[in-house]
Length: 605
Image: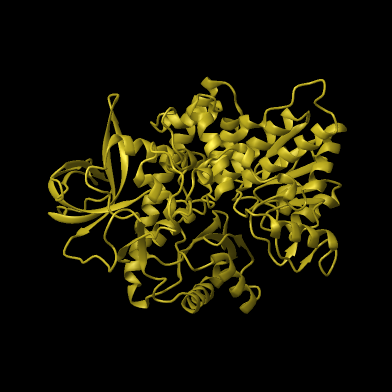
């Protein structure tokens, strides 16, 4: 297992112009994330990037407007994860608000149709729509788009995944990450249309939109064109802000970087939810997870709500998740939320078994010292291997790809899901393997930190060796050292309820804009076990003698915590029977006989 090193973030400049009401600690935390002035933390919707800056938007809007005007049947082709489910719900609700009368959706079954707009998925559509709009997929669906068009179906692709070598011949494509491409199905070499899209996207300041964000942007652009053409002179303009809670959930759950543009979207969605204006489905899922809507923060979406939706796509049918997000009936929403919670519990139990088996595999194979770790077990479930890869990546600090048979009826093909570490672009690594070993990988796609692929079961040993070799070439020893970055020491007396409240709502915190994390030395005054694995501690600050309530989850392994320790922790709020008190949520502890690194002293930095 990987040893963890604590390092402190460096402030990227001096905070300027902040009100005295903003705690100095929070000002320093912002500065460590490049936010130096109040204006850089003002997440107003008016500061969103213009949708018209995205390549392909004009063609997509024109085609959607024609479809609405002429009453075409429109099918939203979604995806079976939380981003895809929320994006599907945004598309359904948004297009209906903008005048579409015949709009429906379909989600591929991962075990029957595979990923995205596949040929099998297109052929299964009955009745056949006149227009397909993909959400969170389609950039790699060359064959699927061709199959749809052969049936006379027009196709708009909205996606945020990285393109492969060749683009499908979609009627329109909106994807902020389409910035370079060598060829497309419209023509060879690259046609002028796709080249222009790539040029526009290259200038677009944010490439971090999730699939649901891309779909929301398309709706904004469509409404803007309808406005310019006078559609809202005699009728009220549809309020698309009512979709922002869905956008926030999908954005947080998909772990895309929370750059400024995404923080605007997420903060607006969080305000709707906390203000009691969230859709019935999300509210029901929040309540089913024993969270409070009034005090909701992005981590609640990421750790409690998102997994409940994802579980449906992993083990059952994501239509259940989409229906939960589409209903306005709160009783029906609670029913869906209970079903999703039950499926999620099954997923957790299955995941725990698979992770334990994976750890045994790794322990037995420890002498191989693989840098790129590939794991395969014939009994594993293809819908859960991504979670296994994620857990093992965290514990090993190595890129991990876990494989399972594609289905119970197809053991000759494997589905793999990979998770990566900083400095190793896993989708590009798969592209390297595909170039070196043509035909070894049947299909692949994804992001820098996560990717999926398919290959023949008989080819697994060859792939595992190729993946390890590429990882060894691209990762040095420094990258293989697990590092936890903190905001330094919290000053004596600063762990107050006031600061905890400011931190909770100051983000939105998330991927690439991390939750504030402090590290201090403490004396463990007392401790006890909660449940079987959790610790409840009372920690004394040696600088002023103050005692702090602290918890650490899944940390007890039969040994007491160190008497003197260094802890990395979040300052959170414990709400017990309506009484709020500050609490330290420990993320890492180590004995204090380990020395601080040079320069790692002082206040938050």
